[in-house]
Length: 491
Image (cartoon, rainbow, N blue to C red; front, side, top):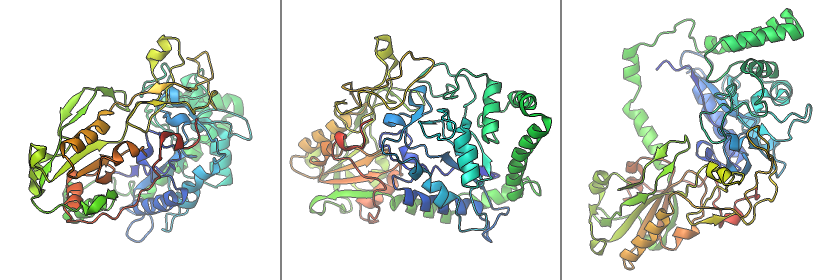
């Protein structure tokens, strides 16, 4: 298809169960993430002979030194989530998927050819300069650790918009120059360049880089600055040479049509989806269902909310599964009295980004807990003083939300399970959960005779498991909390 660099894989270990990007990871185990990172990167970068070639795609592994430690689960796309914290002193463990995985490949390409640092400020981890600045700007984290101690000489590309202006705490597309919000765009480019960055994500304007070059000439002289720019040029060109773009930059559409979407590839992808579905419960062998068994599928109501990108999602009531597909496997009935089993399709709890500007307007600090349960949650166990804090748009540093309460956008999902259990009058209920994060299952477990967990798979994959045409075999890549107080360190 002509793609020569992939902005993947995401190999952060998901130690923070509330993090919005949890579902992009390989789970909470650093060793498993390392194994997956190695396999994924080898697969992308190796051509048929195991080395670089025209079949290779550069892998840009992310996010150095590990983005899965966002304070209270808030994400660093937002000013409200700019800090990564390490209350268990496990900063080094977050680097394991890089050092033991993506940087130790079994194929001839040796290591991932590109790395993306995360937006976060790795709070109090700079033992050399004591800087609390975004990872792309931190000389200790890029030059001393990544380049120096661990010998990485591939491309370092910033995450998107780190050099843009920061103007608001809760906007996904706001600039993210964390810790350096008062610098100009040119100064931000200069700071990142001198920290060891080669490429700027989301920036197609050469001018601030040219301005940064002039700043470097003034401070270090032209010879040193020329040498610095040449290093980045060589790294970037190497990645283009490695995949054969200079020899042949063209895609042949007829070949693309023959390769992309091959039945064998689609079959492998479909089987991988089936193999990812986890069976958590199956009382009295409710599953698999017999062919043409009568099933009742209730519609799902979801209140209006905002998604991770900040886009408004209107309230809706609809079937949460392709009903025409369900009818191919089972007999669908509208009356639960006529059904043999109830099939309930829901999603894991969702409570927003952990920040509400209305609270600020009322005199609060804006910070709220992110919940992993459907019912209202009050953060009685949170820290009275946040580990990190500070922003030019705030006149305080304590981001604590102790004793604040939050409601989930889809509390009605738990209500739907309970209502269906009542309507079925003792007949079994199967609950299928699309989950993006760990969640508290105790709210729905007793009302569910069987539970399947999927991670964004097609409805057909789930139907294959329910009908017994395929057998569930997956294990959870992360632990589920018994209750909200058991989600880890209260931060």
